[in-house]
Amino acid sequence: MSATCEHPLFARAWTSVLGRNAMGWSDRADLVDGLHGRVLEVGAGDGLNFEHYGDGVTEVVAVEPEPHLRAAAVARDIQRITVVEGVAETLPLEDASVDAVVACLVLCTVGSQAAALAEIARVLRPGGELRFYEHVAATGTLGRATQRALDGSGLWPRLAGGCHLTRDTESAIRAAGFTLPDGDLRHFRVSLVPHVAGRALRA
Ligand SMILES: C[S@@+](CC[C@H](N)C(=O)[O-])C[C@H]1O[C@@H](n2cnc3c(N)ncnc32)[C@H](O)[C@@H]1O
Image (cartoon, rainbow, N blue to C red):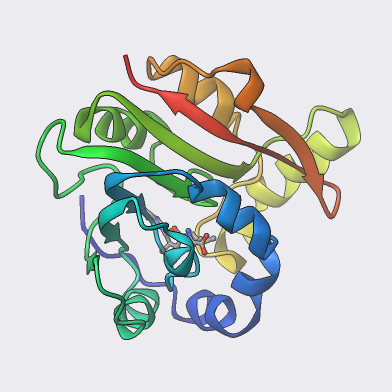
């Protein structure tokens, strides 16, 4: 699988307006709150989460396949953070080499959730955690039908850099063998779109 994917229009829209409005600033801070050690961020985009990593984080490896977004992430030039080309399905890291993985609005876009989550489990140390914040499939009939139509037409994925609206990401994370502690799991809506966020533990 290629380590690069090009979505120049989406990437420019993300860096200029979409990224800052896709989720609240405090949600980005909450997502990475309390992490420590070596962290992998998959699909880091232009690096909107970077400034939220706390002092306990010794190193962040930020994997990003889209050239324009990757260049914007590199330009942030933040100590402790290395931005590298790559995709979640074939991560350029050793087995059990990170303490935590962050996936933020990216499991909607990866080519294969199963392959990406298997790779995330591979690079996490035993007991390490996946922090995630993702939009997911609607449960209501109308919402589901609308999402299916947008995904099926190819229109949404083309406009939104390969994003899919109909994914059941929570089930995919469980199917990959992660444990999701109940108290840490949040289901909520952003502009009517269902989301799930929380932490998942690798056995
Ligand atoms: C909606 S953006 C979110 C960016 C960033 N995580 C954030 O929260 O600002 C989706 C990101 O996933 C990246 N992406 C797409 N396919 C990917 C893949 N197979 N592996 C890793 N990242 C991917 C895109 O290039 C883009 O940066």
